[in-house]
Amino acid sequence: MNGARMAGGIVIVLFVAAAAFGPLLAEFAPFAVDGQRFAGPSLEHWLGTNALGQDVFSGLVHGARTTLFIGLAVATLSTALSGLFGLLAGYSKRLDPVLNAVANMLLVLPSLLLILIVASFSGGGTWQLILTLGLLTWPAYMRLIRASVLSLKEREFVKAAQLFRGGTFYVLRKHLLPFLRPLLRTKFIMSFKQAVAAEAGLAFLGIGDPSLPSWGKMLQQAFSRSETWMTDVWQWTVLPPAFAILLVTVALALLGEKSDRFGSSVPKRTRPAKSGRGFLETAETTVGSQAGTASGVMAAADEPPPPAAVAARGLEVAYGGKTILHPVSFAVETGSVAAIVGESGSGKTTLARALYGLLPDEAVLGEALIGGKRMYGGGSKSAMRRWYDAAFIFQDPRASFNPLMTIGNQMTEAMQLDVPARGKREAAATALREVQLDERLLDRYPHELSGGMLSRALIALALVNKPGVLIADEPTGALDPIVKREILDLLVSKVKEHRMTLLLITHDLRAALRYADCIMVIRDGRLLEDAEKEQWLARQQGQHGQETQLMSRELQLSQ
Ligand SMILES: Nc1ncnc2c1ncn2[C@@H]1O[C@H](COP(=O)(O)OP(=O)(O)OP(=O)(O)O)[C@@H](O)[C@H]1O
Image (cartoon, rainbow, N blue to C red; front, side):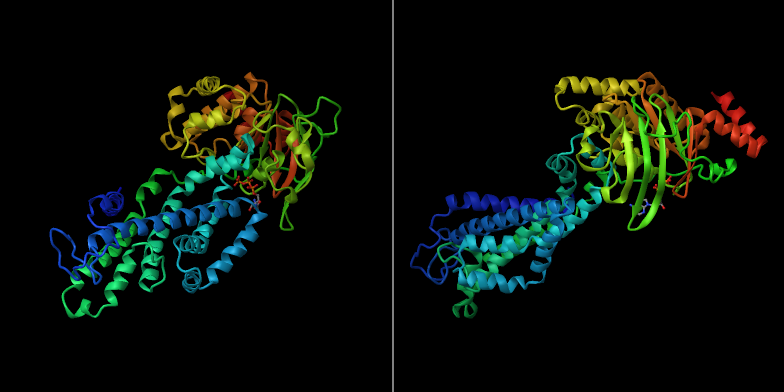
């Protein structure tokens, strides 16, 4: 906590203490008339008396209760509405237009005028004031929270959480809300400050509950008497309440000061550095070859059972009328390793996400099947239990983990609900050991792990339920060549050990040739080649001769 925030916090704590315990110290009731008008500060009346002979100190501490209660109630209501509506608008496409329209309408209304009108007509009751202020002041922060949710919900760890559990309430509470806390905290403090100033202002204008002592009312009383300015009584009738209002609003402003800590404690999302692009150019592919024909990766997906582990039938992706992936058809045999290779922007990630059912239904045509189950179209989507039957490794390991949750919590979250907590932790520890990571990492946060460790942890997370199919989208994109090779060796050895099917998406042709049984080449959103590795290499040798022979020999030596 920085100095300004600490000072603000101390002042607020002192005011809360004064509101809570001050009335016990004050000898007089706030409205009790002592008979001695405009008496100066004395041992009996610590801050003197006002025009009616009422004790100023007593009015001040009782007024603190009113002010702080109204501030707290308005801040709670307004912050709750901003948070709730912001979350819902950002997360739900259906609610977004409605909530946005209401927020826009309230934002253009002259709120001060509305508060004055409502307060005048309702007699300035405390609850009317709280409701009016609370209901009118949520839209600005709601829009900020909505914008944060819109960006957060596209993050890989949120997508992954939707796949584990899918429950909207769970994802909102566990994965989005923790990121919104700093915004909500600031909103709470700002609303508190606004409410304190509004209450004082309204009471000063004579609008307010006459049965409650308040700082604004003390000022109004003082200002309405000519003696206040003709003598020195302003020193104890005006200064104490004015100073109290000023002190509370300044303290709240200091408390709302942006803290650096949040910014530095949450690791920023980084795109993996992409190296070695354009490798395909050294082994130029043949346009118009037998895309979608038979291979170790089989040609047609309409085979009799057992179904292919992963298959596409005329799978096509278009955004806003622009085709990103032209119709592709292929099937990957159970237990094999298939590689989809292509340059940056060729459509590999789009294809991988389409296969796993991660794209919006309206963007996809044709069929994506995993284990014979369709990933798009009606209720059949739920037939394939994502993360249990098939897992997906996202491109960026750092973005795949929630930075505010430990590795262990994220691994246990991905497991079946009916596994007991202790069993889950043991399974997570075993999964980490399998990828040669220390089980003590279970209690660490993602930012405490190196890129290589995170990649391994991500593999452990994907393998934790022993799914039959694994789709890995550039699982080593950001790593240096040595670590990259270690991770891919590990990934493929685990896939073989657990007899899984692996669909490896990579721009690295050498890696594809080293590990895959069959190669699919994609360029400009078209599947250009689909063949068993040996056939593919033979074809390349025919076309590119010595260059490809050298590569093939190099690969054999490295295996
Ligand atoms: N949501 C989207 N809306 C519009 N265009 C998109 C969207 N997602 C991807 N694209 C476009 O689709 C094309 C293929 O992108 P994709 O991410 O699939 O490529 P990639 O081969 O995986 O590239 P990289 O290896 O760099 O990740 C790109 O031109 C990209 O701009």
